[in-house]
Image (spheres, rainbow, N blue to C red):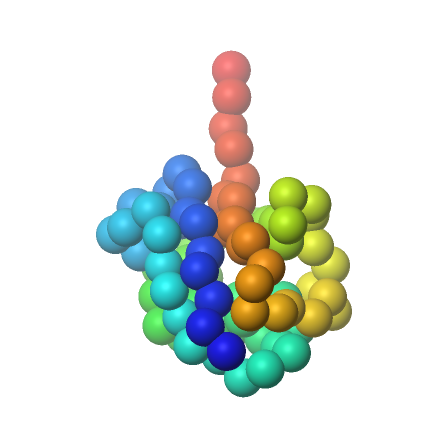
Length: 80
C-alpha cells in the first residue's frame, strides 16, 4: 500500500522534505512502519522518541495502518 506521511520538526530536517510517500505491505502496524523509516533514514534512530499520529490521534505501536490514513511523525519538542 502507498502511505503519505507528514513530517515535523527535526524529522522533517532528517528526511529532507515535509511529506514522504512510502510503499509498505498492506495492514502493516505502526511499529513496522517506524522500523522501515529508521532503516531508510538512519538519522531518525538518533531521536529520543518519535510519536506517530494516525488520523489526528496518537497511535499505539500495534495499530494497523491503512492506505487512506493520514499519518504524521512527531519528534520530541523542546521548549523554554
